[in-house]
Amino acid sequence: MLRNLKLSAKLIGAITLVLVITSGISFWILQGRINQQADEAFRDKLRQITGMTAATRNWFAGNIDVMVPDHNFKHLEQVPVVVAMRTAAEYASHEGMKFRTPSLHPRDPKNQATSLRDGRWKLSRKTPHCRSLWNAPRSMGAK
Image 1 (cartoon, rainbow, N blue to C red):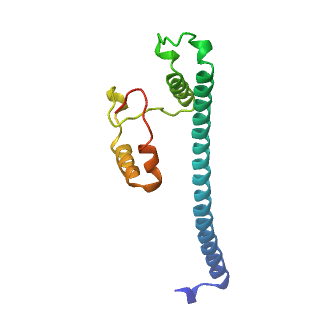
Image 2 (image 1 turned 45 degrees about the vertical axis):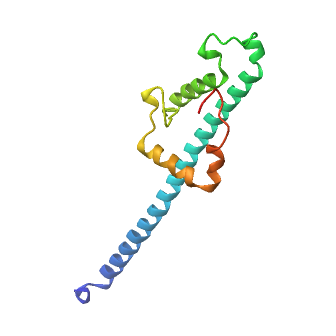
């Protein structure tokens, strides 16, 4: 079949084949870079939300004597952690994300951990460098 073709047709075919192969390889490499950049952008948004949440909590906790002078908390909005979590949820919604605080034993059913999150928590309990997170002292009378 190829013997019957002219030299110019063979050259055009070879050039086309090389272009298709190189285009496929470059698309595959470019797609990997795009995915990597998207992952980095997502992590950067998470860092911003986490940093803003920690700063809000720290500022509110540092000024708790001004905000709640007698330490008589009458509203949930006076608790630094609650303020920080609500601020994070609001900021995340502006970024197109959904902020949740899942729990293994939630009081509110909407905070029930998904099966994926539950599996990751169980795995982290077995991971040596994550044990310190599970053995940390708990506050507010939690068991």
